[in-house]
Length: 131
Image 1 (cartoon, rainbow, N blue to C red):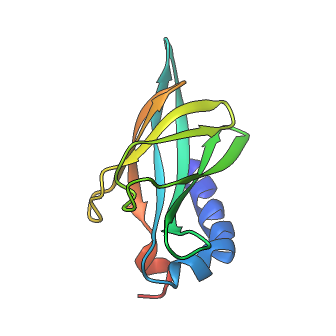
Image 2 (cartoon, rainbow, N blue to C red):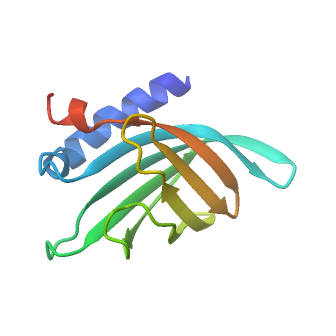
């Protein structure tokens, strides 16, 4: 079921973000893992796209979190300019920080806030731009 959800999400998002990925200076990750909130554990999927902002001078981090049937998206300015710092973000029911480890071979995104998770990611850059 989760595999089908990720496939459908990747197909849908390819249509919406392929122009961003074609810029070749962005990072697109699909991440999944188990989050904890108190004693509760649940699966979370994150779509993370780091790219140039509309001005071309700064960076934006777009994050979509999916938890069951709930999905929410938000965009944050990247104050570090490299997608590596912990960025404060409010996405739907999540409020906290999102941080990418910067490793393109074994990417990990950490959510710390309303719930906490260490999400293993797949880098979709090469697939999205046809390499």
